[in-house]
Length: 240
Image (cartoon, rainbow, N blue to C red; front, side, top):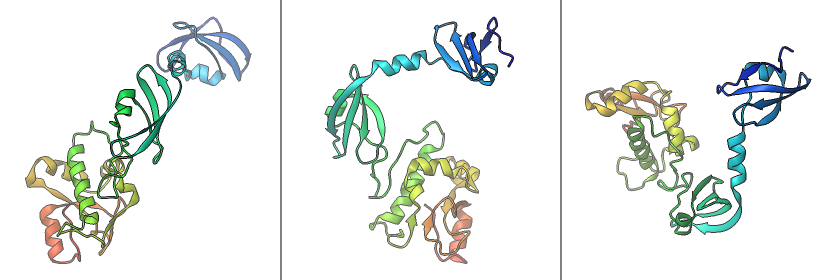
């Protein structure tokens, strides 16, 4: 053990701390210089700087007080509050278990949404997608078209009752996370902003007659190539 009480250490966040007491290699008391926060840590964590000052976290935790109230969204979903800080309340939805914090007036007005509540063609839900991705809107349109083809009986070109979407992909958040790993993804991104390079999401290139849209079978194909395959070898074609 090489830690010393007269040395100023820095953690991984650059916060300075000192050794207050050494009981053993597995029981060292440290104090952060800026806030005075004390905690116990093991020697190897002290040496690597893998210790944190939880002062702000503790303040955040104690500033919320227990609070109970039940609500219903404008779409009929039930949720309840379990803690409160000023006008903010922390809530959890009954059906999905999704928890977040919202303004209490919006909660009472029913103006709160559960992103994991089924809302697309009776099967899909949005989740919390990464909207910093430049292609997320194009991916949303692609996902909605896929859901429509499988679950809308009003789509004349669809696969209603014949093809389905994997449970994981019924959540747009998962779909958005997965498509970057599909073959042909970079070409699809290029084509989403330039129709000359347009690509389609194909479900049966690897397995003829495949009935499930999933990360295991789908890939992107150039639109012209995909249509030509549909006329020749493929039993079904998809340009969602």
